[in-house]
Image (cartoon, rainbow, N blue to C red):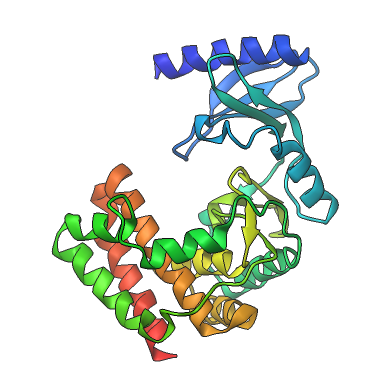
Length: 293
């Protein structure tokens, strides 16, 4: 933790000089794999510093992209500064928005309706075709390269093999189906990244670092996966699935669901292997639900 703190302080010093800012580092934000830190300025204004070296290749175009999707009504915080340091560290500072993550509440039908409304606001925005989430989802669901999720899951053992086989049964009718594009895709749309007011209304969608173009069915699939893994209310699961299938049919949603199932299993195997059994159990429920039609 000391090394992370020292790195964040050094980074903030460099950012402050580059952008003529006066923020002070306060504490690391809870959750997430990529480092995020709470900042304050002398007037008490709060902001969030996020460091993500994997974003260096996109950082030049991200501020314009965020401005565009905010102008279109996406409730994501404004970016105050961004860039890449001399040694290649990518960073951005965003406005602090009050709110509690939806993930701290039961996954209800009312919550699902609010999230559907947010995703439907992404129709036709197509902000960054270079970041093509439709292409990624199809590759994640079907491709067999050494670093693709499918081979990695099989190396986990029988649990991974059985999950791949289960989703292969789901995907069998859709192997030749292409995914549409043209929408804004958040890329990590889950309830951890949606903040709510005290009255339950959505206050912000955060962590748009990975956003790009593709079919919004990608975000519906991630949300549907979460609902099954978290044990969401049946009304929530039904609402998300109905909205997801309305985008471009059940086949597109099924491919996106398989992609996110493989992706999250790969992620948990790397970062939180103790959680794999209950995550995989939820993913089997997801596959069963898709097969039942």
